[in-house]
Length: 534
Image (tube, rainbow, N blue to C red; front, side, top):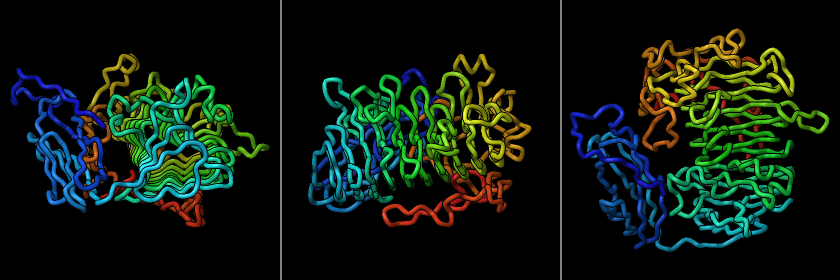
């Protein structure tokens, strides 16, 4: 659980409150909770900023006949049904967070697994994983809605090697919006201090994995260190001592992968690292990806990808790193092809040492169309190192389109020494100062960029997100935030709305057929970002 973190200054009065101490948001440790009749569970919360003096909260239940809640956040299941448990600031009733509690009569089934796994994990089962697990080649595993997959943090063997989920066959994780699959750790380990602890190793789809579906699935607390006895090391995928497991890895250039409506958060490394395959990555939420490096979506040679309508909050380095690194046409690892459009990227790059990235990074012969993205308080505009010198070891393909993006800058400033030294203490300066990896004569010719920090003309008008003052290094997403925009928002006009063939999704017409279902990429929306008006 995410523990409550707050500091109380008893000497202050309400008259002393400033923007830095006024409460901005509340985040609950869980957004959904399944209990059986008579069971209890404790919800905890995090206050942002942690220095707030407005620490008072009140707990309520929408249906006390189903579940009650105490003043300490202890939820008690009373009878079958559903209730919303809400924690609300007593200083500002508009700031709250809600957990949906589902109460059933019978305790969920539980199983414990390690080694080879296949078949079906039935809905609402709790699966305890106490060793590396593998979906064997020519087999499949289906995970039905509501399944909780709990990975042991004890690891494997005397080295306590973090558990990895190897997929040599096919994996179908089929949650629903109301009852997602959750791949996680024990409840008592779901704390803010473990966000970058790398408690297990993530999902690794190998060169033999033909297809994978990740739908309405939460994947969290990943990024375990790769050791010499890690399956990913013995298979030659990752390097022991150097690498940390992403949440999802793909490595089959002929594989078909769909990641949709899911949440990938709290990982030491990248959220998605693609070294091969065709993919639709759409409608997901990425949060707190990368501790000292890492991106939300990292694509290499041998991939053909549509990535759209995703919310990406505070990746360590970039929302997207798009590269044809490893390109070898003779071996089937052909040029990386990516269409990335209508994504909302917030706070990218501020937690990374140096100036390697800060929103979107395109390099090494990748052929991309990157457009209609809403880039909020990120450290830099899209970067294209070595532009004009394309090649698998140099710059991006000259046919790339990186344009019609919207760069908005709030007034929050970085106090990190590197940003003060570079003169990029806010996102506006990062967008506009001269940078050797930004080529304004070729990139973002029609994009919209804030004219100053806090430029009111480029205020996106979010329904509920204080983009002006949100701390740049913040990485915990509040469930109460709403990145839809209000009517009349400037992000609703000026976006690309043409029909050029190189600006259309790869998989909008024929789609990708996974497990007998055909998934098609959604067409670009003529606005900036993942969300329009409600």
